[in-house]
Amino acid sequence: MTNKQNTTDVILIGAGVMSATLGILLKELVPDWNIKVFEKLSNAGEESSNEWNNAGTGHAALCELNYTSENPDGSVDISKAIKINEQFQVSMQFWSYLVNHNLIQNPEDFIRLLPHMSLVQEQQNVDFLKRRFKALSENPLFKGMEFSDDAKKLMEWIPLIMKDRPADEVIAATKIDSGTDVNFGALTRKMFDRLEKQSVEINYNHSVTNINRTSDGLWELKVRNHENGSLDHHKAKFVFIGGGGGSLHLLQKSGIPEGKHIGGFPVSGIFMVCNNPDVAEQHHAKVYGKAKVGAPPMSVPHLDTRFIDNKKMLLFGPFAGFSPKFLKYGSVFDLLTSVKPDNLVTMLAAGAKNMSLTKYLIQQVMLTKEQRMEELREFIPNAKSEDWELVVAGQRVQVIKDTEAEGKGALQFGTEVISAKDGSIAALLGASPGASTAVHVMLEVIQKCFPQHIKEWEPKIKEMIPSYGVSLMDNPELLEEIHASTAESLGLNDNNQTDSKRNSRFLKQA
Image 1 (cartoon, rainbow, N blue to C red):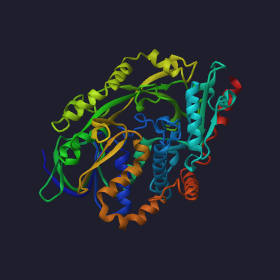
Image 2: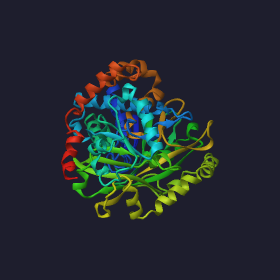
Image 3: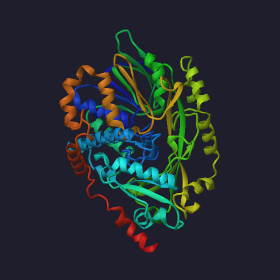
Image 4: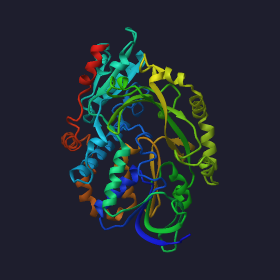
């Protein structure tokens, strides 16, 4: 066993999309800083960022009904949708910068144009969708959105979903063609390839087992090398804990006061994947439905075209599962060992408050394949069991904390950055919209942890993200300019046929 001491400027824990994004941002801002990465698995992007472990929607609030809530007076609150859309625009600008400066190549490997749709049934839901459409379509961020409750038009948009439906069914959808499918696993791997070329030391098969503050103000990490069993010590001025579900344990080990009274609740996802290419070819969109009454936001059903390894796939889900692991490749003791004296009351309160979620998860775990097929048939009426198989997606650890509004043990469904007061360490917790807003979230880390450099770095940040510090909603001309330039850089103008052309062959058969 060796006991080497190494000191560096920055250590990134976890080789996912968040660490990749922060690493490249810092390398562009301060090229001479030394950066090290430690990843438990043998490759980048194998956990939450992996294309099989996340929805890959390119969350821009174009289709997700849970980002637009109904007010008591019947109006629709689109403030969350606006926020998420603006954050996704930040990601698009940064990816464009990477492509334009040859830092990554072949954007078609990770992003494709794909219509985003919302689909509802029953009159009250159709009425809500109309109001939602009106509110969104008046906003420049959602320009180009269409609404239809006409069966003939819907047959053009989504033939696989509309075929064999009753003629008198009340059904409606919105569609916007500027949506995307993003392969975050491919993007993550491209960014880590770039970081390696920029002399970033990336250590795979290495686990961080402990974090301590030293008397000289540095952070000391104890790191296990799984290839030879050695245990080394590494010091850094700044540490980012971006290890997905594994971040909570490391945040707790850091001992910072900001990490107290925070817990985590793991939820696993299960998708159904179509193994019949003829069926997959008949659908070309991401279609989000409405969560059932009482179901959590994570359960919104969606039928998604995905491009994985440049192959067109069709996925439906998610069905929730439960595992006490905080990572797909984690330990069954993760949940138990995350309960500490300081968060015990918080965790107990969360358990008492979320009995309905517990019941929902139990019901989901007990579903048979045929019961899952019945849910799929609400989207594809003639779906055949033999054409679909189950795939277990990644683990999501929802943040549990005490809030003023909800009291002790409030379950959070977003993404949260927890950082020390002095900015020397930060951790990313939570889940959706996650990867889609990675650039916005990492800029937040930079602002919180390096406030003394922001003025000096701002010109470079604005070069990478032209809308930095500006509301795109309030600047429609800049928005138009950014939409045009990102589409050009990322190859989103003509790298896909329109869905109507793709669906025309099936329409002739139907």
